[in-house]
Image (cartoon, rainbow, N blue to C red):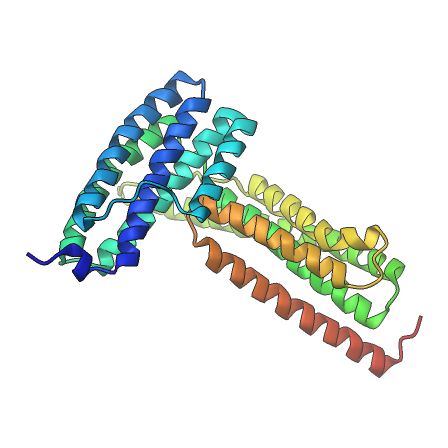
Length: 322
């Protein structure tokens, strides 16, 4: 029989074992800090499942790892601290986020190694995920992570930050005056927030009307009709997008409000917030955190460069001087 350590990448083996060790360590930490009986019961069941999973991967790869690496140790401390500070709600959110990450990771690997010994092993782990862990976590959290809310918040924050950072850069390139940049950026931010909120409301309201028409047609034809009630009402969705946009827009404007006379401080502040926001939302929704951070940093780099260049060009063409 072929040794799994030879047939599979050792780095993948190490990753799978460390991920299970991290989940097990996290569940044990959360079990120690939570006082909610339901959460304790679910965590006890999850710990038992993770103990089996960890032992399985160690046997499969004939590799024994007892300690987390530095990156996972830091992540464990941060998540534990967050749950200590924000209580049982944070515990619920972390449990669901970890579950989403686990399912996506194993599904991707199962697709990649389908038909191989590793694929068969992943199949059994996924059955545990779907039949036990996912059911346990869902019974506790009742799906507090709403995909539409994540989308709306991320859409608003990202658009507000990128658009107003671009505006601040362009205005500095054209005017060079902090007071004019502040006025122009603030009015642009308010107009942008209203526009984003209105766009979200009209789009979802139109979708709701189309669904209602399709549902009425199916009822007339005697067909089974799905519910026309949307997970996120148009008005609530519009409010989420608009408020998130304003919050995102204040990030690049804030350094100017404090007296910055160049766009450099706005760029640095926006870059740091992009990393923080991308990390949090990517973790909660199960997205690839590194990919999301790099993509958003690339976007704001392009936005700043193009906007500042347009501002300088406008200053040269129209001779703006203040």
